[in-house]
Length: 104
Length: 143
Image (cartoon, rainbow over all chains, first blue to last red; front, side, top):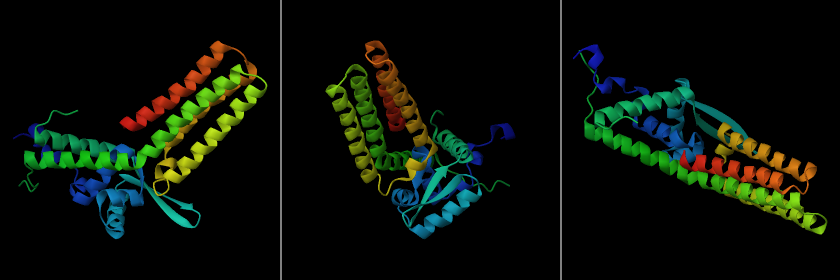
């Protein structure tokens, strides 16, 4: 197999192969921006596990984390960045190719 | 040597289905108040500005106060229903929707003030408010 005919699995994003990170980005795909609690409920994980994975996605530039206050309560929002969106699109395209689906 | 783990077509399909399911459920669970609000705001302000542009005296007062009351009630509904899911209200996309609605609303108000009584202009401007709000709601519902 030549480099030009590389198997699509080589195009899968390393960071998004983790199931929790995959689910976080999937939850943000349509919504764009969600609160920390909204993502936690959608992905069904603990606050600390989500926090850890959000940090790695944020350092990779896939997510931006916003902080605000409602009264004295801190509110954290998660937004998929342009880089994160294109990495997600490429990851899904590779998955579709592996699954034998035509790319959209 | 190739160390990339292999993935079968079934596994890839399962991940694609999971991504679609998660993405839809997260969006549906959090967006309905926003879609309902922008749609209702568009309908209320469109009808209100149309009525204001074509009426005078007591009827104008009723249209004015009625529109304000409906908008105020919608704001209370919106603030109450987005509690715990307010992150989107601070996003660029939502700001874009509200700015688009406001520009159309300001144009309809301008018609009500400076072209009072013009059915054609009032129809166009108030229709624009409704169309803009419907486009925003449809865009968010389909995203």
